[in-house]
Image 1 (spheres, rainbow, N blue to C red):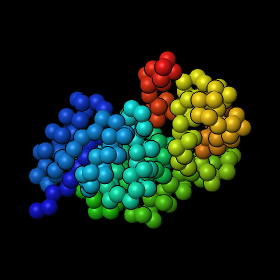
Image 2: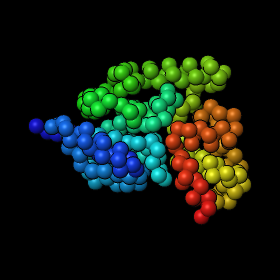
Image 3: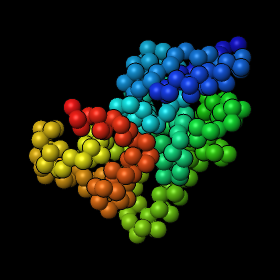
Image 4: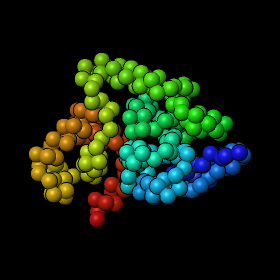
Length: 234
């Protein structure tokens, strides 16, 4: 019997151990590797070519959404299951826009996680107890974006669109308390370019100002507060 190869990516050793214990109790899983940050995850996916990646969103440096986008952009076959302690509908939207096939809270029951792994390997998309094919998940996302747009009276086209690598980088600087001018100097780009990126970030996140954008990023685990503080001091 061909086993399902699984890569675990989470920076908490205790949580990784818990996932290992769950998967090792199943005869059809093979844990091929473990990673603790985004850059390591990309290297492991490239070298191990796993069937499934269990991916935390709140990772040091590059977050799980960024990693997932790069996995999909490189056309790796891995199906990404996003695991998060920040469980809400908006976060789920961002996960699927990034390329994940399933979205699970970290307190998911072990047998449920096993079922989700089997479902994504079969080509399905999973949100909670809902199972979708490709058309179904696209319809689910379209409905969610439209409802959000109606609530806030905004154009739905760009809502929940993935932030570009540069936009995510700028958002990380914002959470460190840097002004647009300071960000421009740090990145070697013009002040106007930073302002243009900030406008795009605010629209994609459907927030009104940079403070709300920073809170959004921290609340969803895209940026780690301890990392922001340490990097600001360097």
